[in-house]
Length: 337
Image 1 (tube, rainbow, N blue to C red):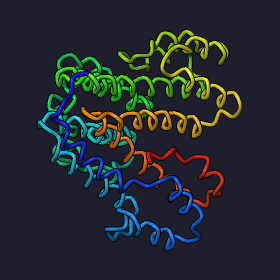
Image 2 (cartoon, rainbow, N blue to C red; image 1 turned 90 degrees about the vertical axis):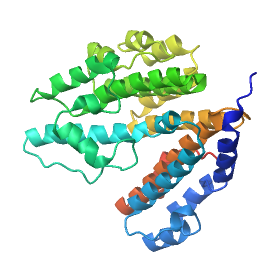
Image 3 (cartoon, rainbow, N blue to C red; image 1 turned 180 degrees about the vertical axis):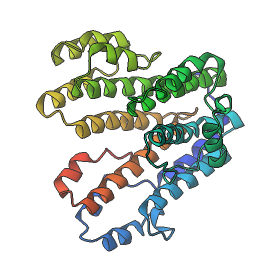
Image 4 (cartoon, rainbow, N blue to C red; image 1 turned 120 degrees about the vertical axis):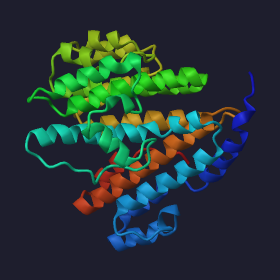
């Protein structure tokens, strides 16, 4: 195997940052905490307690920004640095396009949830959308124009479901990211993006089934170019879960889909289905950290950090809402460490 030494320094920094990641036992301590003050005290033992903030969301965002800043410093090449920031651009675009649809319906635009961590400054991104200067979007490419056109055409329809915005922008994002991975000549990044496409499609299958949408709708919303043949999902849609499991048994996701099918049959619990997908991604990340040379440990760590923040949000949002501890434990994602 060819050794890629250009990521040695970045991987070493990541090994150090891994020491800061929270074990699953810490989240159980948070769940057992009696008050928000107790939670803040526990967070004071971690990197999330290094900054004072009234809003927990500020803590999460600041920590993600700190980690992203470190990785930008150690990753070689400006294009590669941007590769790991485009997901924030995607999130912001979803918010901005939804704002436009809601405004047409007489609603109020909400820019408070935007995250200033992408490749395009927020004021610039807002201007692009407000002035319809789409050629300046970070994901705009000649071969992806048809995807964006599909969204813009649908936005003119008064009956547009805002979920369609998520679906279409996901298509645009993954189409762009696969091209970026190819041009960066990083085979693992291409594999990683295809894995994310597959996991998105698997989750979409169950979401569409729960919503009792027609088979044609599923065919329209699945994202192409993953490793899992979308036709297998479409062909299995109107059949029993056993058919789905059989049709995907020899894919990398055979066990995952079988577990999801069981949950669907037993409870149709969307939160538990999402947890299974996230746990698959964490297992994927754990395999990455054992690669000595290459970009895999950096990708694995970024997955771990984002999942850690998700766990913190699950616990603290749940505590605020009075969700019982046993339910919160059931929703926790596996930890990286």
